[in-house]
Length: 143
Image (cartoon, rainbow, N blue to C red; front, side):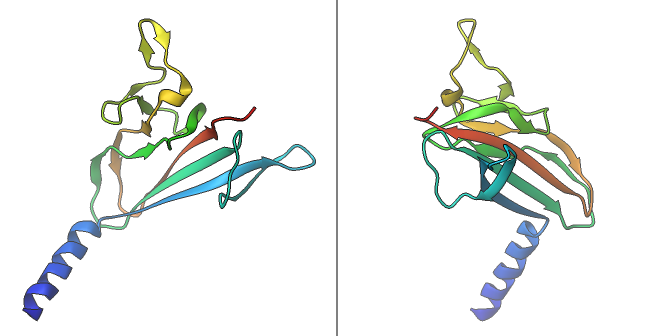
């Protein structure tokens, strides 16, 4: 039985060892001089801006192709679209289908609070290459 468990652990490590990912968040605040500072997003209030950074690190010796990473837009927030980077991002209003920003319904752009995710199509990530994807959201209810 121990050999089977050890084999399973080795297989899982191999399968999931190709790409290291991390999703972090920071709160953006203006200091007294008007400069934007990033602080840990330990708490937030309506109107605050949060920045999410999704890091993808290829630690394998082979190119990884056709990645489609996404960052969900949390409930109770609105996307700040001009902040998504790289700028070839896609957006979703159903969490499944992604299209270039803005999505229009009956010829009108949907509300920023209707977006459920931001995604990218990454053709390849070379060995040792690290990619950072970012987006910002505003907590609903504030100025």
